[in-house]
Image 1 (spheres, helix red, strand yellow):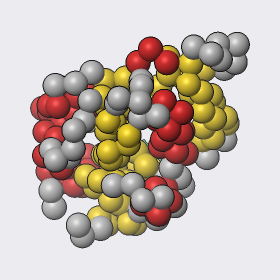
Image 2: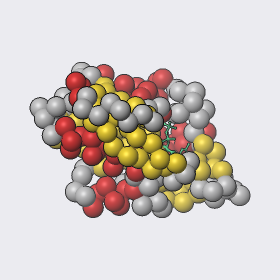
Image 3: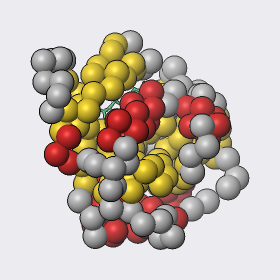
Image 4: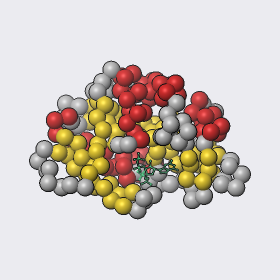
Length: 193
Ligand code: G4P
């Protein structure tokens, strides 16, 4: 097990409905030493890419993306979830549907902060159905930027997101892939990588 899998096995809590709670160290309370290690690991995995910006989505992606951006020495840009639509022209906009929350959000990034010169590393905490990543990819495309890769902290391997993104031809690196979770025993099965 790598450092992240070890931490998930120790402190992750399996909830009914295939939900993995990691809020004691990743997406509510954050273990900063772990965040630093995650940032270094993303840098190691994408060190061959000419990254100019790290792109993520609020809220939980932000902290993680900051640590990755620091390793690359580049800015971090986060997409905002927004209900308003009257800002077209100044903003790149994409629709993102959440299967977990059963709602739709628009996500927006100011045109000031992404351009065709950019080489992006897209980061997020969870990959489930892949809607958030697809929204971020479509914003990158609208800007004419190059998506060099996508880095995920925890991929739920039994949901379709990972397959969808890899089938689109993108380089997707997940630091931990959970293939199965048992809410009765709390057992978490990781994919060998
Ligand atoms: P998708 O983006 O891959 O399509 O995922 P989906 O719509 O299914 O998930 C919606 C939200 O739920 C996402 O956060 C995602 O990170 C989170 N999520 C999905 N599965 C799990 C899980 O097993 N455990 C936890 N803790 N979160 C999960 P969000 O609401 O869009 O963002 P945020 O504001 O929380 O960052």
